[in-house]
Image 1 (cartoon, rainbow, N blue to C red):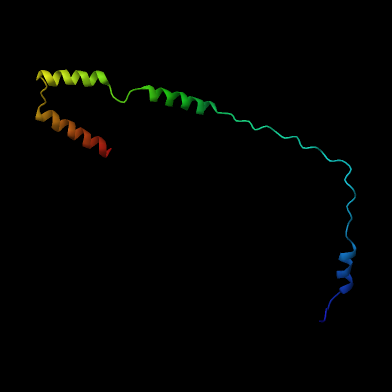
Image 2 (image 1 turned 180 degrees about the vertical axis):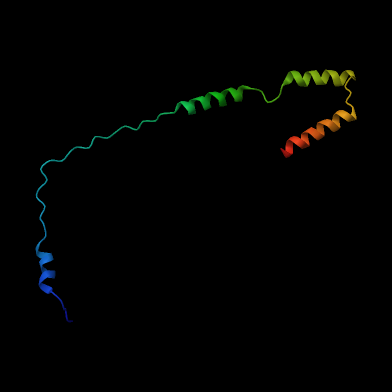
Length: 95
């Protein structure tokens, strides 16, 4: 094998290694404790979600009122009212 070029400068690289001296002092590492903090915004969300869970899904007073009207036979809905409600629902759905 033939090596061409300046072999002398290449060999100087291996002879110029810096030696590291002994380490005099080692700083001790103090472990930090993990800290968890909840933002004010998250706390507000927790309060709102808790309040919403306590609100019933059904308004029982409205159901009782409807039952009373229905069982008494006085519940009467005109076709016009049904068409108006359906039309409004369709318009709201498209919007």
